[in-house]
Length: 428
Image 1: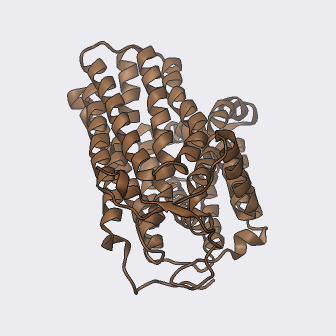
Image 2: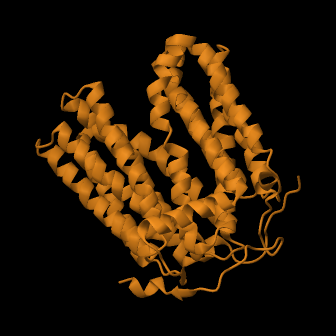
């Protein structure tokens, strides 16, 4: 497998528009990491039970999944920067309402669940378009660095946000922590308003369901795309329960409560290191390389299954994050390279739903299945499923042979003659 590094031509950082996008997504990512911690503690401060907390979190997740596909359709119809700043502004307003309710002691668990659903819908509205807009902010040669930089900055923001959330709640209360989240959305909206992007393709549209069907057909037109989305379904079905249920039980029982926090920290360090690597590592066959690295994710459940010492468990968590991040960068780049611009938001929406729709089911079944089979047996099954599905994903030639389109090294996708709309004309 050969590797190339682009050293000529303008980089992503040379684009002012990309810098605004990077800043906006980083700041909103910081707030998005603070919010779930603050919300969970807010529910508990209100006397909510574990079941009520689960319902509040589920309201966000369920509405986000249900809304994402349709937000992909909207993201391919309307100017993407308009949707980004609109969703950020409304999310900031929504979180400000939650903050005021908590600070003034007017909040209830039911109200938090309703507002969680609202925020889930707003997150879905802005999510696919914030990924689809990236090729409009940089040159084709700078796209790999842009994808890597965005993911690295957001992962860094998440690490900082998780750490900051506990401090904010501990010193000021959950309401003020949510207020910080609202402020980050407001800053992101300003950043997205400052963006000036090139014209986006405009094609004749069908009905909402018709456009959704066109997005689905685009997904199934590419074997590598639907194969790896299917692999993600299985990954999240089995791994969600490892991180959310079995993993904490096994690790804390053997090594204490702090050990699980260390394991998650090692996971995030793996993400950060993987992001740094992708700034320079440019595999020619990007999905082959990415999927090989994805197989490292099986290391985490495997070391948990074998009762490994804590340093080995931390290493397994690190390798999980490292492999997943290298895959994610190559995956995002493959989609942005191969999918027609007028269908990008819809395809990213299908990717998001395919990645996470099975996670709630996995969380629900993990406890009963692990009790029936035994925790360690289930961890072995999970590791085998993650490694096996990754290896099976390498069988189609489309996954193995898809090559990087960088600096003219491979033939770009066929473009369709379409008109364009200048999104900067909609900016204030």
